[in-house]
Image 1 (cartoon, rainbow, N blue to C red):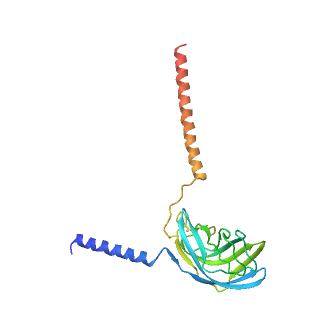
Image 2: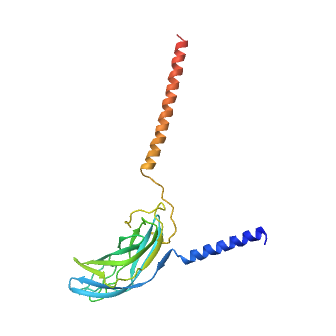
Length: 231
């Protein structure tokens, strides 16, 4: 086999291997997970099961994480008027990160009849990775505030993650976890507008002042020499 053919064959094999690796390691894996909720309500303990879907979409240097309930998880003995029910929740982070992500959403747009399962609107929040690696997102505590009361629903079945993201921390390095990305591509760093930029700006300003000072000194020197000649 000639060197040219051998080189072409190696290049093709490398490309196929790279494609295989990419296909074997998807940037995001999501699945709908049934979550058993135990709810503490103003009228006693309740339980419900709802399939939970969590999705992530790249947004700037982070990810917009959206949590969806496919079934209602609690009910009210009285009608809840439009705008009277406000939900919020937490999502547990695992894998390369830890802690929780808070997600929120709008109040109910339509009235919820009495003794009817409460359908939760989609809740969302922004996650910014502090570490590089695979991060899991699992349903956490759901809180429902309505008519001056608070209902808290806690998962009890050790549910599996609804989403796994292959994320890259800003700057590409590792750091402490916390805070609040969903394709797993490595996002570019945002332009810095902090102390480093200020230092550069001050350095430029200093250079300008220095040049102005040198020019002023040169002008004064020439002026002094001219005055001596005309004396």
